[in-house]
Image 1 (cartoon, rainbow, N blue to C red):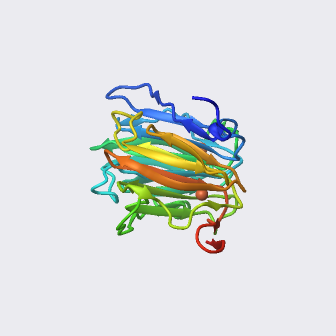
Image 2 (image 1 turned 90 degrees about the vertical axis):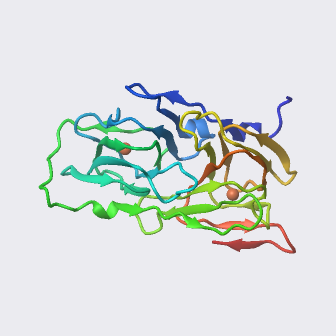
Amino acid sequence: MAKTKYDYLVKPLKYRKLPGAGKAEYITMWQGADLEGLNVSFIWGYHRNEGKWGVGGEFGHVHPYGEVFMFTGLDYDNPNTMSAEVRLELGEEAEEHVIAAPSVIAIPAGVPHLPMVTKKADKPFGFLAISCDAKDKTTELKSRKKAFVLANKTGEMITRLELRDIKRTKGGNADFMGHWTGKKLNGFDLNFTWAFHTGTGLWHEHDPHVHPNDEALVFVGCDPDNPDYLGAEIEFRFGEEQEVHVFDKPTVVIAPKGLVHCPLITRKVEKPYSFTAICLAHEHTTTWFGGEKPFTSQ
Ligand SMILES: [Fe+2]
Ligand SMILES: [Fe+2]
């Protein structure tokens, strides 16, 4: 197909297999340079094997930007469950925390974190890590103190991810959705959603729209055995000219600040799929152009 004006903003996800025993695990890794210069990096992956993760070395690591971890189950019928237990260490004194439900962990810049160990995985689960920087500036720690058993200086970094039933009656928008915002935190110019979808049709009534910030829209499948399978066919339009792009594989769509985008239309669905909108601002601000006159919502 001939190149179009906005082709460069639609990129298929490429997964690689993680080394290790058991059935395959897969991750896809993106930095700012891969995302047309957005000031963000992210990792999304499917995990199922028990044991230590291949990140964070022996004593953990640190970096000069905030990072958010999200743990989720992959089961559309039980969106608020995760049948696995992951232990991770947070803070100067390596406090141990166990994640056993869909959760978000917001790690401020400069706070040591990891290593991480999957203690139990009755079912595969998903893991999203978003770093508030275009580049990896990680420093591995050479040593770290261990917390006393009862210390808890870092527990407030962890929040339960609640996926609300949107009670969708039509259109392609989410059935179950959670939202996290860095509004009350320093160093997180970030808010993001996590959702499960099965609907077809228009996502939003008032498209097209635009934001004063960049965003990365990531469409992923829910089958940990087939990371390259999305389960849906999506139509996405860019620009005032409404240039049409269609994809049916896991994909990241980049919407640079100021670029009018959408409508977003789900054309077909074979299996439930997931979606995260990674927005590089504290708050989600949208100006909608559909209808009689533009209006802005937060
Ligand atoms: Fe990190
Ligand atoms: Fe948008």
